[in-house]
Image (tube, rainbow, N blue to C red; front, side, top):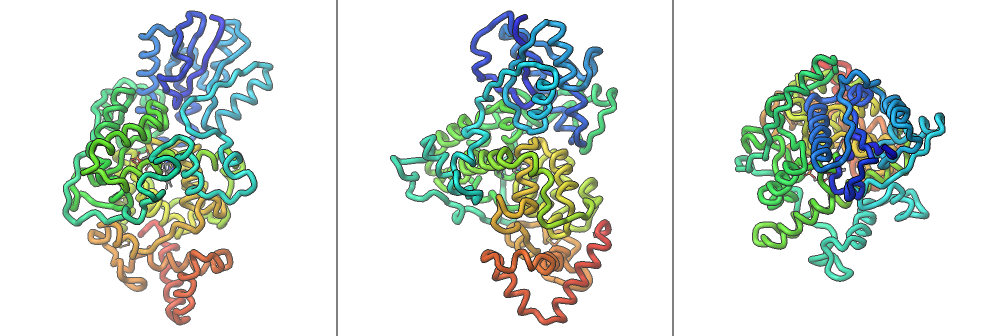
Length: 516
Ligand code: FAD
Ligand code: SF4
């Protein structure tokens, strides 16, 4: 063996140029580590899916003729630390150079670099060949400003990769079809069931049990629903293009319950491709091209608004938040612009709350390790922001509970987009909303103990008074924000009595937050 090459758990890119040639002197190293299972409490399905996908990838590499050293969680030689295991292997094979693909997480990047520096080890870096833009994309695209606009970024990527472009102009003449989208799903509506798999990962489940790995949430290890290899990931993509894409944009921002759309309520028309994308089993361009291909063959059923909405998420938001992460780490992790410090309410771990929206969003997260974007942003995120929950506590929760949660994408979405803890780098105004929005966009309120129309008094929806509590408590920061000025006008028009009643109601709720 003359070269060791490290493959991290989210670097399962079978089409990486590393694998084009076979060399018996190259040993690929993969490892299951307590360091990774324990840095936060993860959902059980997430750990199962990661280990299953890693094992499938290691086996596939081996079968195709590459040398693989796969260290399982309970192997005797496993030191449970990435760098200690590497140290051991480098000694064993007497190599001084280690080849790595650039980690997407600052945590691992830092760990590898400081270990190499301290031990005089030469790290040879390779691109993951996954993203469309580099780690420094924001500096490149916005050289003279920290006023990053996702829309500007997205248009650049579209032009650069010639995605939905006709010559120099956007296909259809417009860049953005958000206005056509954002519809509420009808009260009674048939949605195709999500494609779920039935992977038997009982052996890994048993391993987690015997190794005493602490996890959260439910898992049926005999039938893990998530794709764990490239073949399944491609099936999921195909299924989405056929059944999800025709209504993707239209109902992207809506929320439903089992009583109005049946068993597809937890994923609606969302693709559920984030796990396959974030582990790199699928390439973003491959996903976008498959969707564009489906659209161009089925324009009678898939409108331009749907395909534009989908591409925007992947080549726009996904790449953009990665740029934010790398431009601002490690400081980004500690930002708390609004000084929110409340502990995370207990119902985030149990779903035991009378608030139907929170109950549904948390329950399905515990059941499936998944919630769609609007549930994350406008239900669990919105409530935490209104209730002044510590972004750190919330960050750990999002980082643990979702199947797709890896820090580079989770942190900017939580700290930035959802909690405004970065002071407005991503969101030009805080994503806050009262029951009015919940009713407009979803069907939870009909099943709720609380009354969405009531702002104070018995059974008043907590979102209503907490909304005004937020407005009042952060007035110095936001009163001159032109996107918030309407809210301040409404607030200022309320009588002092009305204002006091709202504040009192909100404070009562905040004092008894675990009883809501
Ligand atoms: P779809 O709705 O089908 O969208 C298609 C794809 O677009 C997704 O798979 C994803 O790759 C991409 N995408 C869409 N929105 C975003 C976004 N805001 N940022 C980055 N990519 C996006 N996404 C993660 O992948 N990992 C996370 O840990 C994560 N944490 C989040 C935390 C909060 C508080 C919020 C508000 C959002 C978070 N997101 C995260 C973004 C988004 O909610 C998920 O990517 C999406 O819900 C995944 O489901 P899907 O594959 O069905 O997405
Ligand atoms: Fe949520 Fe309030 Fe609607 Fe209940 S009434 S579902 S708490 S927004």
